[in-house]
Length: 431
Image (cartoon, rainbow, N blue to C red; front, side, top):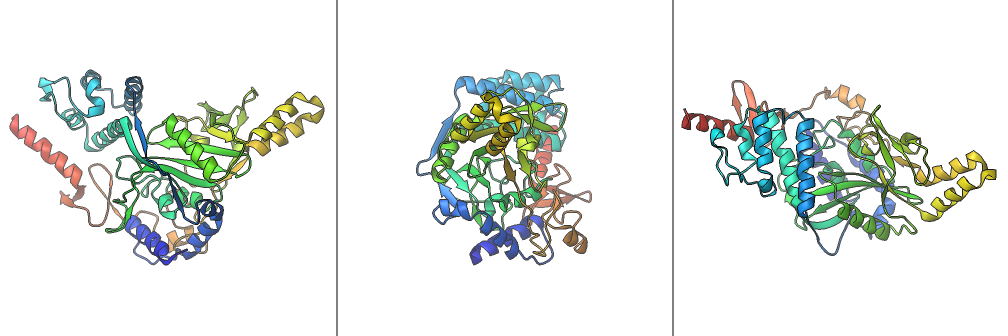
């Protein structure tokens, strides 16, 4: 553990959480260093492995059509396609979607051909918060058309903090202001989790980082979990799913970690819509099994898609020799059910997450999903609510040093101010 790591980790927590009290991150980072020792050794003494050649991915015409369909479904699931005019407008401009360009003009809404498609959303009657969400969803799909960068495998603490923070306009509940941010530290200190992501070879200034501290901008990422013996679980991909990236990640993981005799990744889960949990079905067995009997989530502060997501089916790679032993035990009735289950458990079981020490006191474990602090420190510092400011328009996090204005007693971010100004100018133009 270097002095720079301690200083940088501490500074990101101060900047992103606006803590007005002193931190003690050394015990937490010592816990991380011990837990990730095997990964760091496999990475040649470094916390991050980087591919030699860049990754380049472009969508085919068929893939674009499928992605556009998924985009419409996501808008519909959020209730944003209830406006018939907006829905018709989006569908009629499908051919320009991935270029963010209007190809069918809408004079009644003062939308010209060639205009920016995402900016045209504001012509319809959406409030600032919903407009921001819709534009971010659309931007996320547009970015899937072309992705270029290097593939990284990382156990660096700064990557665990920024697992869902980037300049690529996507996020999740594990962002530094997310409802499940506490889980980032649990993944950081377990012995089995790494982060795979695509980024350029140039570090950037992230909003969640203090000025002057640069980091990798994740265009795509996926949590990967391995028990180092019999399995590798591939978590949900963000902000989009790509089979080629999954294949490239798998090849890198088995090579870099020297995991031999592993199968290709395959879907082993089924979504259970009746309750908040996935199930496991391993070929050729037809038995549906409770996934929580095998994927043990040790510290339940994060949102573990492997178990809970209803938009993702678990994917894993398993050791072929152990799999074959299990298959033989199924055919050998004299071995009995217990022997079969023991071999299946050996194949599937993994313990994800670990109790993380509080970065403030360095003594107690955190047990909050939306905080990095233990309960004692939350009480001592009155930290049951966040210390940073929120925009009254979109509800977004306003970081120290970012432009904002007070209007009618409320704080607005720069983007919302620009959108409000644009609406006012248009109203004056067409008055």
